[in-house]
Length: 133
Image (cartoon, rainbow, N blue to C red; front, top):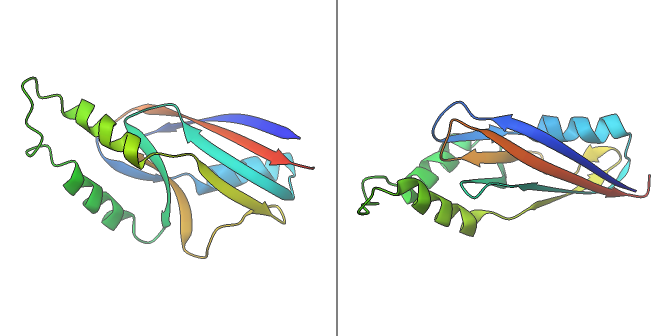
């Protein structure tokens, strides 16, 4: 079985790390899937997805803000958002998350995050689950 879902994730700030793990888990629980794999992707070039330590979101954002230092990105037309999009393309890849016994099989401190750098915006997240259920 292949299950497809779309999520809308709304950022409220220019730069933000948003935990989407509970929303992903609710898809698994609602579909009553016990074993499988979840693939998560975004259709945007100026945000990304990541698995990271859920207690360290501030540090993740701080490191990424240093990469995206607006003052260091001086272009003739101040195309800062374009530079952010280029860098996010190097950081971005779909997430693959195992599903075991009806739960996202993440580490104790892991969560799935959407990383926003050109917000606030509404972002579309695509979720595909491949399962035998």
